[in-house]
Length: 104
Image (cartoon, rainbow, N blue to C red; front, side, top):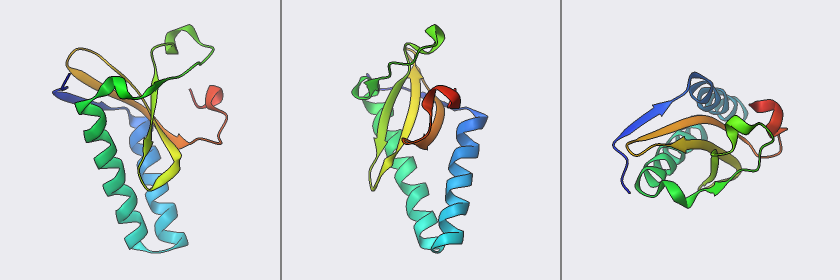
């Protein structure tokens, strides 16, 4: 399955920007740039194989089809998404130590 469209929720865009800003303030622009490139590569990988992510076991019934996938080089961060026949829907991109039930 190769998805054609990507829909990044506002919350996921904010997640990417917030983390990038944090990396830039804590280290430098190179780490922020590496983060952004790693997120882009992960999203492209997911678009090629959307079933590769693990199903999440979230309590809310409306989130039962949500999957999670890693970001290479940033092992503690996860991309949460769902997909249709043609579209990847990115819900959040967060640190795995967060209370995931509250994130959603």
